[in-house]
Length: 152
Image (cartoon, rainbow, N blue to C red):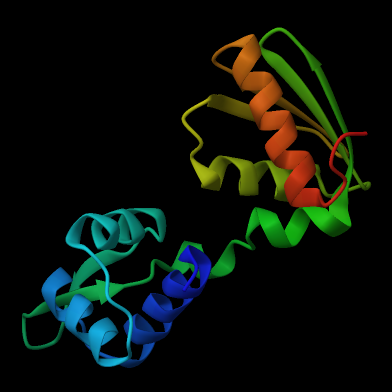
């Protein structure tokens, strides 16, 4: 099972079951044929941005923050909204369709890539500030790949 499939399974479980601990989540997954280590599960929980919220009975359980559900994934946005990317040194300029830059920039910010210091968006242009020139190339390649354009 791929990471994406496993994480989708975790999200489905969180939406339909009251999962109170990592161990309970691991057991739910195992019942469905997915064996996972504690370290992998911790990483999945962090990447999925799951949070523990108190229930009406006072018992905390995992939940999906509202902003996560209202923020489209960058992988879903880029194939339709991406126009181009180019940069120098620590700066990457990403061009989008008119009116889409702020949405794509929010998607980039939401990824919380450690190489990215921040974004600044206009109407169809995003300035992505990265930690190093090497990181700029990595982020540019990652964005192009997510957009489905590869090297252009």
